[in-house]
Image 1 (cartoon, rainbow, N blue to C red):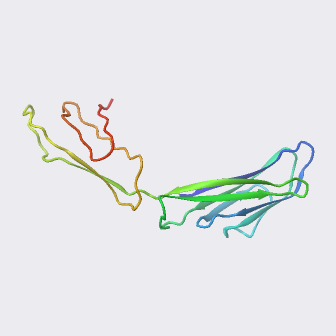
Image 2: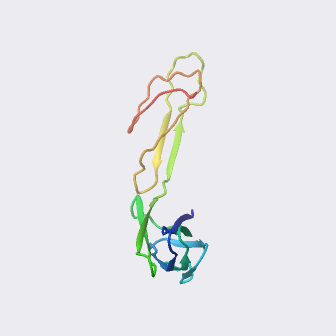
Image 3: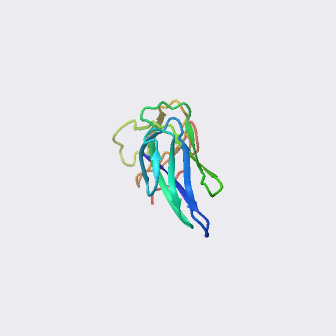
Length: 178
């Protein structure tokens, strides 16, 4: 999956242009830059190398310039926790405007590997026999981190009556599909 940061520099002045604008960006370790687009200026060193500086000769008054960076977390990067946090900070300076800092945070969640099975004791029931049949739904998590807020939906066909429901964890809500 490719994610994108937009770095937008706006000259809020209504009087003058910003000159010799520099936007150094310390790229977070662990993320790989896969694309970069910008409407003006130059980027050094040439991407995708990691840390970079976007240089713009001039930004006219009341005008914005945008650089977009596409990045990925390398496939197969083993998760060290259920979520990883990457913080990206860009600073803008100019020869005639005070510097400003902007920070963006990316949270990458460890992939889940949930499984579900539904096992009936028999494939065929006799209508009207009033014998309760039991179905067992099993959810597995083959990840070393806990899955949170898992929802299992089991839609029962019209004509069957639910006699009882139990779960080893969580809560149960009984209803019919509309």
